[in-house]
Image 1 (cartoon, rainbow, N blue to C red):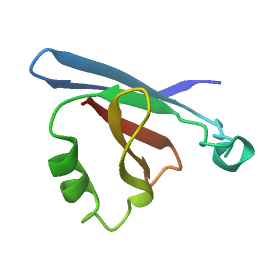
Image 2 (image 1 turned 180 degrees about the vertical axis):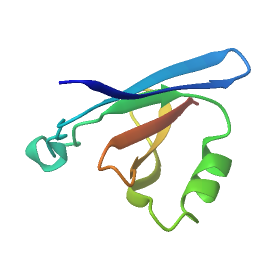
Image 3 (image 1 turned 180 degrees about the horizontal axis):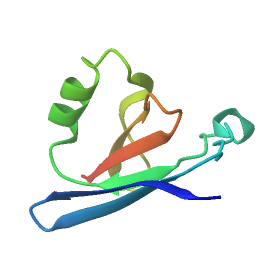
Length: 92
């Protein structure tokens, strides 16, 4: 596979490096495990506000609305336009 695209996202002290490879096909494993399979799990602050913002985007699918987990996080899950599942979490 040949590297096709690189992107670095940065906000405050957080930096995320992304790359895309020619010919790569992301498998959809979300339904294969109870609770889903996540591509990315991000812990942050302001989860409710982030959910409100992301839920307005036409190409984002809400998989799980914000809910409290027994391990002390409030989380929600979305599928992005490329089929990746992102979970955003905030400690309670």
